[in-house]
Every structure is written in structure tokens, then in C-alpha cells.
Length: 399
Image (cartoon, rainbow, N blue to C red; front, top):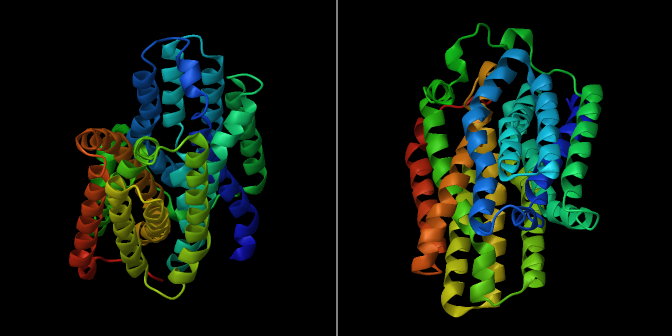
């Protein structure tokens, strides 16, 4: 099994790293690009940043379906090339509508992540998947950390340079994948037939959610991710206004978050999943996240730097345990012929959270700085109650 995974898994891990690096590479330069076209910079930066997430929500289950029908390899490679087109368009710019169109193309080309998770499900037995999903999560965390640095350095050449670098890396990565990534989906496990309803994302969701187990897991995950993204969406504002930190101190904090996440997903989750049930690791992750959110919320009242760092480390550990274990449970709740659709649906759940949570966090933060964090703690509690109450009724494939 390791021999089968060695080359393809290196490619999949590198692709996950680059996916999240590309997601954050835009952060240092987008305000400076947008200011060429409008004076309402904050509004349009927010809209441009969210449009890709919305498009990802719409297409991820459908692209997952395509990977169930035609295989993981073509979906991954075409998604990389589609992303490259979007990056080049953003770099060329010229008008606001071009920037929006480039992000739309990027969102519509987001099929590689669910297809890669499905790839792991194809080649590994259920009990081994969580450890590998943890490694992918760690690669994603490192990529998100590296993205702003890559963007900042490339921007020394020009504001467009980060996007041309991203496009070149996407094309090079697709070429590498075409050489080392064999198809993993067996013919017997492929979906056959075609209906136009498959294009409708809500039809795909209805198909996925016929499973009671998946309904519970998706509902719990949505609540968890809304709570998590609520914290992330205004964290820099929180640090600036409550702690009176500057960019350097905020950057150090984000580096700590990335390192802790890398440790949790890349090492600790694998160790725990080798000795504990996936559901128990999920519960530990949710509990730690709730405790961490509470501590960060208290910082709004005390401005304690010690409590801030302890809270951040605790909830990052919690998230780092939750995501690979929950992804493993989702894969075990689906058959081999629907791994792509199910993983696409799981990615869409996270996209929905990225659309809803920033709006909720902004509204709550205006009322009181601690409310997004205490609200996140409550959402973690609800997640834990749902999973605890229904855990005995969930059905998984564990062979």
C-alpha cells in the first residue's frame, strides 16, 4: 500500500500545499490591486474574496460526481489547469469584472481537493485514512502560512507577479501529476449513466444526504466550521484593537497557529487515530476548540497575552484533531462509488461556513469583541451534543 501511495501521495500532498498557498497568496496584494478600480476597497476585497468560496459551494459536489464517473486523475489535472487560467486573468486585471471572473473560474475549478481526498479513500482501507488526511491537512496549513510570504516576495517584482507565479506552479504541478498519478478508481466502482440533474448542486446534496449518518456528520461539521471561521474572519482586527498589535506581532501569531496546526494534523492526529476511535478523536478536537475559544474570548476583557497564546494553541490543536478525524468518518460513511461526491459535499459544507461565518462574526463583533468567540464556544458545544447523541446510530465501513 505504501508503495502504491509513495509517488501519487507526494503529488497529492504537494498539491494540497499549493492549493492553500494560492488561497492566501492573494492576501498581501489584493487591496493594492483593487484600489486601482474603486475607492470602496474594503467592500470589494470582501466580495472578491467570497465569490470563489460561493462558486466552490455550488460546484464541489458536481465535480466530485465527475470524479466518481470519470476518475480522480482527470478532475485533479483539469482543476489545476483551470486554476492557472484564473490566476493569469487576475494578474492581467484591467477591470473589476475581470477580477471577479478570475475568482469565479478559480472557484469553479475547485474539484481537485475532494478528488484527492477520494483518491486516498480509493487506495487505503478505512482505518488508515484518517492518518493520511491529517498529513494533507498539515500540508494545507503550511501552504496557507507560506502563501502570504510568497505573495509578498513576488510583489516586489510587480503586483501581478504573485498570480503568474501561482499559474506557473499550477501548470508545473499538473505536468508532474500527469506523470506520477495513476487512476485509482476501479471501473466496477464508477458511477454509470448521466442525467442533467447531476449539474444541479442541490440535487447532488439530496443524493448525498439520503444517508442518515452523512446528514448527522455534515450538520455537525457545518456548525463546527461556522464557529471556527467566525474566529478566523476577524482575528486580525481583534489583535489590532484589543491587543494593540502591529503587523509583525500578528504575523508571529499566525506563524504559531500554522506550526501548531502542522503538529496537530501531521503528527498528533495520526498517533491518536492509531489507538483511538475516529469519533473519540473528533470529540476531543471539538472540546479543545471550545476551551480555546473561551480563553480567547476572555482576552477581550483582560487583554492577557498569556491567555491569548494558550487559547490559540488549544483551539488550533482541537481543529487539527477534528478535521482529519471527521474527514475519515465521512469517507467511512460512503461507499467506493460515491467518495468523490461525498468529499465534494464535505468541501461545500466548509465553503458555506466561509460565506456565513464572516457576516455573523462582523455583526457580533460590533456588539462586543468577545461575542464571536463565546458564540463559537457555544457552537462547539452544540456540535459535541449532536455527535454524542447520535453516535450510537451512525453506521460506518471499517473493513
